[in-house]
Length: 122
Image (cartoon, rainbow, N blue to C red; front, side, top):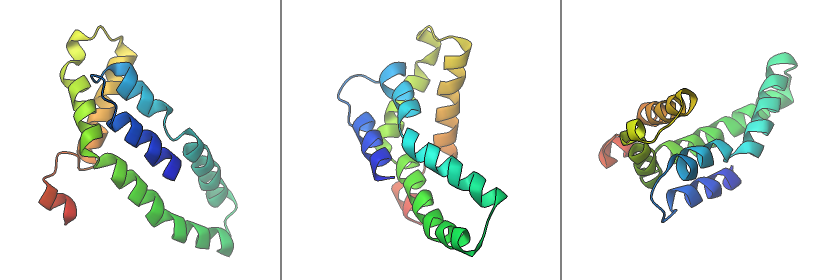
C-alpha cells in the first residue's frame, strides 16, 4: 500500500502539464503489486476462508480503505485527472482511451474528490 501511495504521489506531484500518458496511463500502472496481492487474497477469502483469513481481512480492510481514500481524496492528483478530462475532446484519444479518462474522473468524483475540505473530514 505504501508503494502505491508513493507511485500516486509521484504522479500527483509531476511538474509537467497533465497528459493522458503522464496521468491516466501512469495511474493504470500504479499499484500493480497491491492489485495482484489483493486479487489473490480476495479469491482465497471467497473460495477457502477460515478464521485466520477472516482475521487478516478484518485487519487489512480498514487499511485498504484508507489507501483508496488517500488516493481518491488527493487534490493534486484529482486536479491532474480533471485537467485531462476537461480537454479530452481535443486530445485525439481513441474510444478506449476516452472511456478510461471518463471512468477515472467519474470514480474520483464518486470517491469524494469534489467534496469541500470540511466535507472530506466528516
